[in-house]
Picture 1 (cartoon, one colour):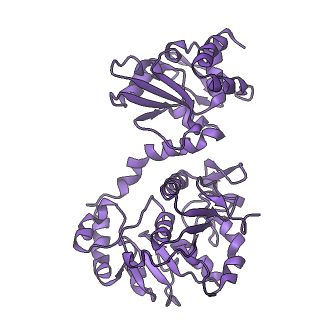
Picture 2 (spheres, rainbow, N blue to C red; picture 1 turned 45 degrees about the vertical axis):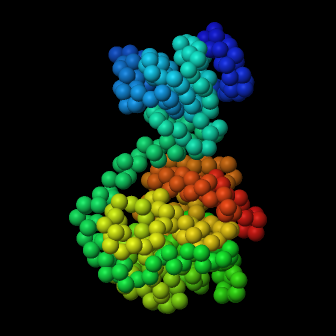
Picture 3 (cartoon, rainbow, N blue to C red; picture 1 turned 90 degrees about the vertical axis):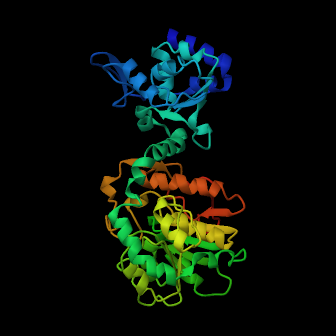
Length: 429
């Protein structure tokens, strides 16, 4: 152990003894570490620079300037300590929470650099990010450690990235955008004529619901879902729009189809034979698809500002949307009164090197070869995914946490681990 490490650890042991014991067990030997020099220098870990190699302090100043002068500030990732020291120069700062995103990287930094200036400050609290269920605001996330985050801290990493990308992702939903105005004008008459989704709320009376998405693990359950048939008392079968065609191809007729995306076409929702199947949609859906549907149609809104004017003219029930159609499908089941919900194909990942059940690679947008990110699956292994899937997963987990009165089950271990769900004993071997 280096002299730096022992001095740094002595402070941590005094202030956070449990955390210190854990840091002593962190393995730094598998890290590829290099000194990278420019106008200044920094450390590179597994090919990722922890800070600028030209001017670490100016970079820390820029990072600190992005944070408000709040009494409590959160920093995710420890870096080389520069940002912490800059923030502690603020007279109005009362509490600085530093969340470790990679324990072995932090242990390495403790070995090679003096971290005492911020570790000894009484305003500092040090903890592992993964020990918390949710992120805290306001925060700055050290970019290098969002890439280097380890498995234990990955869930918080995903929430940080989702929050950071929020404004960028919402740019497509400008209420004044011509394409949005045009689509809402086109569906106005349908919204006026169709039934309110709120008519379905409370109609289930505690009956179980199955919510079917289109992840690859759905393929494991086609036979079992088909065997349900139309027998009385079976769970209500709600599917997302892209799952409808694969279900139909395996002889499975859902009770309700949920669609919210303007890009869903009759290729995904062919109207033939849809009598007796309810369609729940949001007004951004394709009017030609809505109009051709033969079953009962129900319409609702999300909380998006794009629906503000239409909502004032045509009040309808609201469903939760967190970026994906899986969210309103699950919310519908809850609002209908389901006390137990089992998720099928809710993978948020690409298990078995496939993107979706019943569709070819790239048919629904993402291609397997473009997957550069990962989540942990139900076996504890890393499985390929993409950024928006991780964001959708975060929002579903938040929704589940907000509805403790409902039991949520996952039907497969092969997709992403969904916090708040248990594995269904009948479907998960």
